[in-house]
Image (cartoon, rainbow, N blue to C red; front, side, top):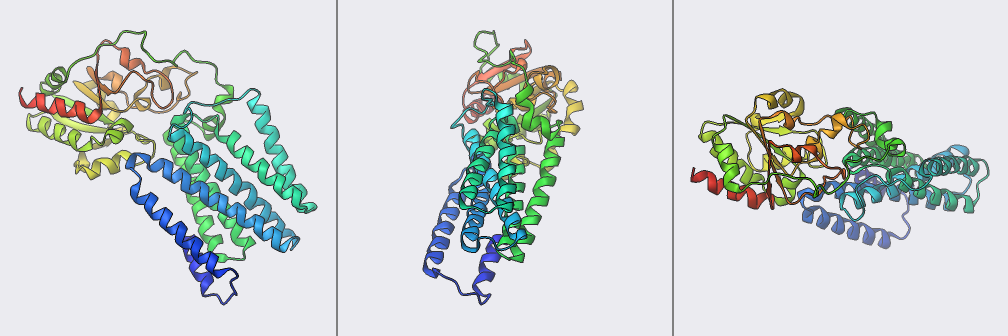
Length: 419
């Protein structure tokens, strides 16, 4: 919104605008693309859209700084400093956001990617980027600006590659803060106070959100960003197909739920993908009518972004008082007869508590393994987004119901009606 206001104010500032026709065409094309993308995107793909739009903002700020440098050259020392800051931060935010988009869209592996000698290479690129920025300030040259832009883009990629899928939401928040700082710096470059204020607000709020998310995940931000460089290989990675599991039918699950005294429902990303929130609510209502105590357990990052599950269930008119946050619901699992996990995996994986080599180690989870019985609704034995197996799937007290979440829930509801 700050960028929009800054753009509108510019038209009424009295400054002579060159290439006005091209500017208006670009505004129109960008507005149409943005509106269509925002309306067409599925709720499950919202994190990818956020990452992509955030990257575009950082890239735009970097390009604006490059153009301003080409026009004004060696204006003054502060101009050069803020130009360098905008280029570095904006380019890192752009390339890093593209990598997060690729991970979330599963166009590349969501597991941490550590290239040979990844840590020293990343450190060298970071040092070279900072050194190039200082050099450009002290001795402005066009080729240095191009090199600085290239190094910043490379560092953005190297910066995000080692981050595992479960931690991508935190990195998106961090990159969003960086985009805000880039916009703020570009506000000085363009002598635009509104961009300076808006960018600072985005940067500050993004930094605060990143800190809160890292705290909710139970790990320091440094572990999220650089943990893959020091992590050892873990035996938790795999398909799980060589280990025995207990599967059941929809009727089996309906019987377990229908004769329970207390049931906790754990929605996850799979629920969102299948758009099964309304069917889950219908199941919960049927159980409540039978006298079963029903609650929903909400993990802070279930659905890949904070608040994703809350919004999804609110759309299905799930009573707000049935939504229990992790700290509130965890003590109740031990007194629960059946836990129904719908499309969640990493947020209920006990490896976060027990396996120091796991990429999610230290992340607070929902303690579903403490319940008397656990039912998992899954499409297959494929590991979760973090790429590691979940020991709960192989627990003798766990029953797996394979298939699309909405289809499986529909069959459970139909079976429950006949009990």
